[in-house]
Length: 222
Image: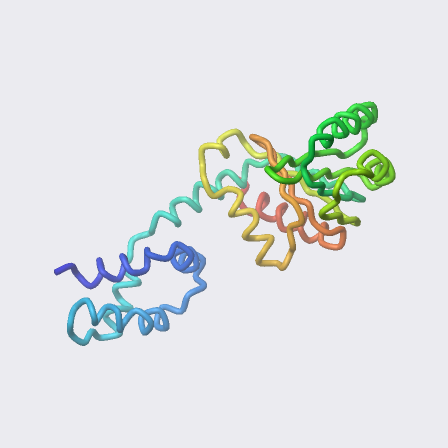
């Protein structure tokens, strides 16, 4: 028969989100012990003291999430400058045989302007274009015969330059998005390359989004 500590740890490890919340000290240990008590007693086939479960939880060694979070925080301290762009709009069109040709027209036109924000997210069934708001009329004209499935205005972006090691460590994007979500910031779009991560949010949320990401960088800097 396994020990109480081992069984308690296995039950908790079934939920990585629970283990994460414990690492953040967001879980009441006594409440967790009461929740685990019936299942532990079912395994042992006898009554188990709640206090013993509490002690088993407190004695648990740092889990994998805790170790991973330490590595992620080190990466956060190494991120480069944050770049904010405002007055953006996005357009999502259903993919078609003519969409790529019109996409090339748009790219050729915007490549002549050095200060324009322009990115493309090409999916299986649809494609999203994110551009500076001053190009809305251009987009509407070029793609007037395409099927528009979604469109948003008054957007802004904040881009983070990540160190190259980010591609070797999973959980980086989750860590960034988690902190934005906790503050109630809705992510409209996500754009990424190997070492850059850009979130598109509503213009009214951009100041808070920038502040949150900057705090992650500052708090974890060496």
